[in-house]
Length: 317
Image (cartoon, rainbow, N blue to C red; front, top):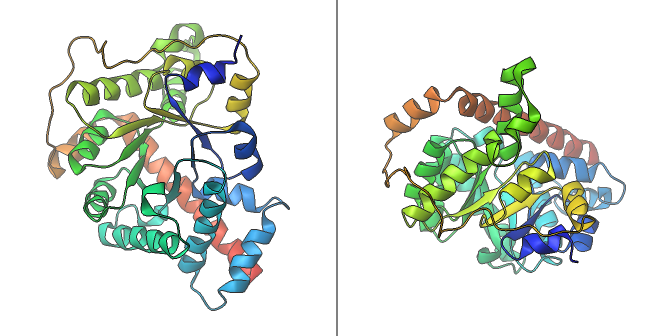
């Protein structure tokens, strides 16, 4: 009998959520995603420290932003030597509310990849799913730069991304689960909120049904998993980006993983296509306490790790 990881691959494109080259090589994903936190974690290992030092050595006098972008692209290039598909590289989260600056950084990242001989089709520029980030993605997509909208926690964010024509969205399953579990406190019953009833799984399923029913071409990539049960419950989603630890668990567990999501079975009461404007978006996001809080928290955490990465680069200079 094959492993659950191999069974999952029959329905879903498997993506590795890591900056660890050896884990990517061992687990054979199609794509890989990175973010400032994952790169920060990687460069603190002896194995990857030389890559950071080389970037600093080769670009003395560069600004902190330039060094960070060159480091992210250096990791991305190495990853693309391993995976057959795409890598996601993130724009600095500190620019999440600045449309113009996000566009400029996205273009700069693609320029670095193309200067290294990497076609833009193999790169996804990751941007936070704020209103400003989504509008930046609209501009980048019109330039032929494909975007991955991250820190996505709600259907209104997904609707706005669809209208902007983004290539891919990354709804965060685990962080949604975390919020509802914390909010429920002692009333939380894990067995009752597992599988299809997991609040993170429910959110991705809602987005999947909206996109497929309305013919939205944007890819859906479930992200931020806390356990393998959440992954199995979303088998059939376009893509799933999974940590090395959970990929290994699935790889070492025998059994089938049947598709749980399918365009052929979307159910009833799926909203019709909606073209959001800024006021509608902000009003709907504000009405969703979980999405508002987790988006803000995610930006803060990624921004804090970006600051730490700046300091590491400065120390290595």
